[in-house]
Each structure stands twice: as structure tokens, then as C-alpha cells.
Amino acid sequence: MRLDSLPGGDLIESGLADLERGLRTAPAFLVAIGEPRLRTLGVEVPAHSHAAPERALYDLLSESAGDGAHSQYNALIRRLVSFERALACADR
Image (cartoon, rainbow, N blue to C red; front, side, top):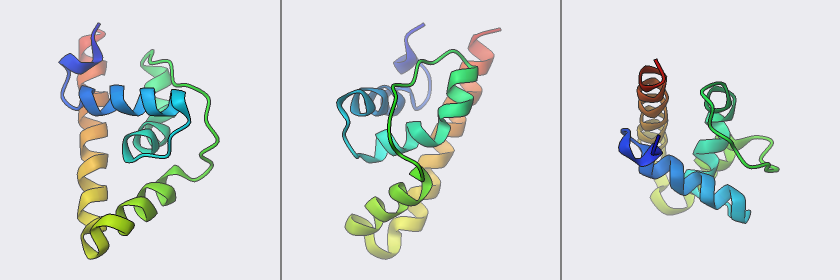
């Protein structure tokens, strides 16, 4: 199944590619946050060294969005959850 056919799949694919390249991007941190559930759903997540991806994502967003980091963080988490739910339904 093509991941980009699911809601948020484009973001997840970008994050997987960024993790593979060792980049510290919002999509990479988002995939690292979702890693346990994504692996359960059959997504191969590249090895990474992000011990606290939640904090790293928030810090990255704070650099560019300042006070808007909180709402951007929550929006990204919602997209991750939406993707995970869609993938779980598609696997049935």
C-alpha cells in the first residue's frame, strides 16, 4: 500500500525519508514520535537517535513559529493520529 494515499501519508513518507538521511526535521521527529504504533502497523521506521522526539519537535517549531509552536505541534500530532487510524483501517 502506498502510504501517501492515506491522510497525512505525504508527511509520514517525508519523515521516513528524513530519518533515513539523518535529518532533524519536523516530519522526522513526528515519525519518531509515532514509531511504536507505526511499527505495530507494519511501517518500517529507520533507526534514529531521537531520544526525546516530542521535545525536539516542539523546540524546532518554536524556532520558526514562536508562540504558535503549540498549535502547530498539536496539528502535526493530529495528522499523525489520523494517518495511524487510516492505516489501521486499511490493513483490515
